[in-house]
Each structure stands twice: as structure tokens, then as C-alpha cells.
Image (tube, rainbow, N blue to C red; front, side):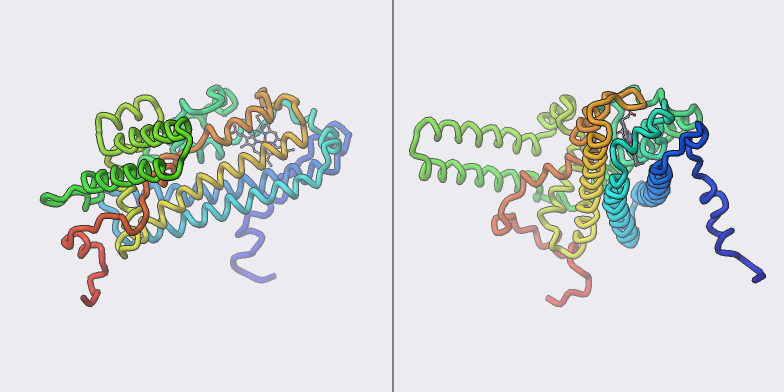
Length: 357
Ligand code: HEM
């Protein structure tokens, strides 16, 4: 036999390949599809492990007081991988769906009270991404976890999450203020000009006085929400009401990066932030496919973990999102040709140093 490291041992396949014990067999009621059910869950959990491993490293890189450019590149690559994994594993629900709902009834009763609620890695992932506990649809999910897992979850909650690390990194971004230049003042004027133009268009295009009045009201509402971006007191009210989470300063920095993303120095931060939004979307898509699969398998039956089942899962799709504050800022972007020109001193710092002028 060949000496040295062996494939089988390196991958711990003795443990992994002997970890499929069918409950139906224990009751002498062999259910063929239970093997698929177990292996699908195990494959998901293995991928969750990889996702946590990558997210953890990104959190620790972004939590540094100063984040070097090369680390942004690493974070971008790793978050891209996280997005690919989440998208890939979502496709695996289709394999599980080759089991018919009736085949599932062959062994479902043997699984009680085991449930996806007990997936510690999934809870840890939500927490590490930065999902606040008070926005959870089910605040009692923790009853399902083991005591040692709860302690780990608590310690994750008291450390940086991806959300808080990104917030801190954005807050540390320079360029928003220089001598008499203030990004927020400049951009506010641009947005107000855009609003006035929208009102002029409405006057030209809408004939019915009632429709016109309605449109003006809509535009004024939009103006109110625009202005809150540039007034810290107004913004704070949105935070208190829970309609915004990302700090005032971090929001300004994200807006700046989105508007001036064509400058070399901002390209990578922009791509990283877009990828973070995509990871949030990929997790929602996971939740939605899981919900669709569950409603196909068990209809409106309650879950083995005691939730309302598919109703509960559907509500988590839109309620349990982490980075909506970033995604929603697209409403505040103006047309490229109206973006205010940056003072040369700032523009210069955002170009590659070797650029020939
Ligand atoms: C026939 C297949 C499946 C059915 C019928 C099913 C059913 C359910 C139900 C009803 C819940 C809500 C909690 C409860 O009351 O039990 C749930 C939660 C969950 N399931 Fe599944 N599930 C299936 C497959 C999977 C797979 C393959 C995974 C992959 C890891 C998974 C992971 C989870 C997770 C993480 C939760 C917690 C979600 C949350 O609270 O947001 N499930 N599942």
C-alpha cells in the first residue's frame, strides 16, 4: 500500500460516508428517499461551513482600522465566492424535489421534532451577516438550539458582523469634505435641481389637473426622503423608526462611491459593495426556493419545528434582509451627466498615481 497521506483519510471520508443513518430503517420501515433527504441536508451544511469560513475572514479584514487596498480585493473575491455558493446550493433544492410529497410522508413522522430551525450554521450565518434579532419573523427560534450553540451565537452577536464592519469601513472613507467642498451640499443641490425638472416635466406632460396634483405630491414625498439623506437630524429619525439602519456617514460614503465608481480608486470598493448586495439577494432567493419546495412537499401543514410552515418561510424572504439600505440608495442616483464634478484635489487622489495628464 502507498505510504503518506491518503485521499480517504485526508478528506475524513470514514466519518462523512458513515454519517447517513436512516430513521426509517430504525423503525423497520425503510424509506428509499430518506437517503437523498439526509445527503441533501449534509451537502447544504458543508457549503454553509465554507460560506461561514469566507464571511468570517471578510469580517476580520474589514474590521481593521485601516483596510489596505489588497485586502479589499481579497474581500471582493471571497464575497463573490459566497454569492456563487449560495446560488449553487439553491439549485440543489431541485434534486430534493425528485422526491415526491408522498415519498416524503414515508419517513416525515420519524423526524419529529428535528427541524431546519436547529440549523446552527444557518443562524450563525444570518447573525454574522448582520441580521438584527428584532427583525426576525420568529424570535423564539433560539429555543431550538443547543446551549453551547447559543453561547457561540451570543458571542457572534457581540462581535463585528459583516454589516457593522462595512459600516465602519465606509465611515472611515475620506473625500467627503475638503476645505470649502462638501459632497453632501453639492449633491443636495443636484438632487433638488432634478426634482424641479421632474416638476416641470409633469406640468408639460400631464393634462388632467387631478393627475398633475397627484404627481406633484409624489415628487414632494420623494424630496422629503432625499433631504433626509443630507440632514443628520432627519436621518436619525429614520434610524429610530427602523426605516434605515446604516449610519448617516456610511450612507454618504456609499452614495459617493456609487456616483464616482468610475474613478480607479473606487472601483474595487464599489464592486465589493455590489457583491454584498448580491449575497443578500442570493440568500433571499435561497429562502424563496426553500419556501416553494416546502409548500410543494407539505402544503400548509405546520413545520416539525412548530412554525406555521410555508407561511412563516415566505415571510422571512422579504423581512430578513440585511443590506437593503445599500440596495435602496439606487433611488438617489442622478443621471451620469448631471453628477457634480469633483474638485481636482480629490479627483487626483482617486486616479491611479501613474496616470499621464
Ligand atoms: C422536504 C424538504 C424540506 C422540508 C419539508 C422543510 C421544511 C421546513 C419547515 C416547515 C421549516 C420551518 C421551521 C419548522 O417549523 O420546522 C424549515 C426551516 C428551515 N429549513 Fe427546511 N425543509 C426541507 C428541506 C431543507 C433543506 C434541504 C435545508 C438545507 C439545509 C433546509 C434548511 C432549513 C433551515 C435553515 C430552516 C430555518 C429557516 C428559517 O428559520 O429562516 N430545509 N424547513
